[in-house]
Image (cartoon, rainbow, N blue to C red; front, side):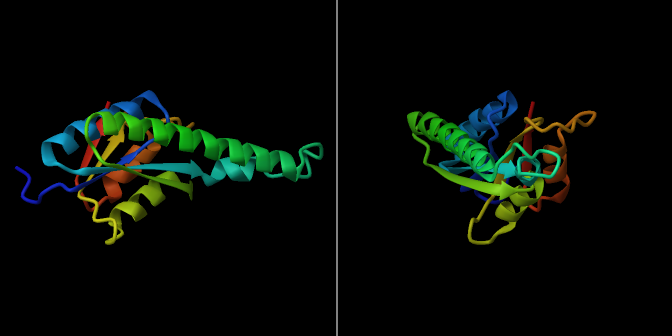
Length: 155
């Protein structure tokens, strides 16, 4: 039995099928608890480091990397807007946050920030990350072990 009322649910979204299932679960829980869903998309720093011009890629200009970064941000905004619409159709208030960094660490940082008042994290078991672990994706595994709020993992 949950002793504390769930008012704010954090759901990391990366566009993967598991993150969409996580969103569906977060919306379901939010309806039961009359909570707000906060969708977060963290664009991994490793992507940004990988697309920077380098000595071994002289034909790759800074302008091209800027275009790629802008495209990634547009995709994140588009996906979060779609998630917001999906939540609105269910009568759920949905807030969005787009960040650039380390997904696991930034999800935990947002969840632990007192001003966000996160009561629950709902996360897909595996996202779009390249690293695969035996049962969970590396980000969900990191969140499970570091969160000081309850975590629901959706397969």
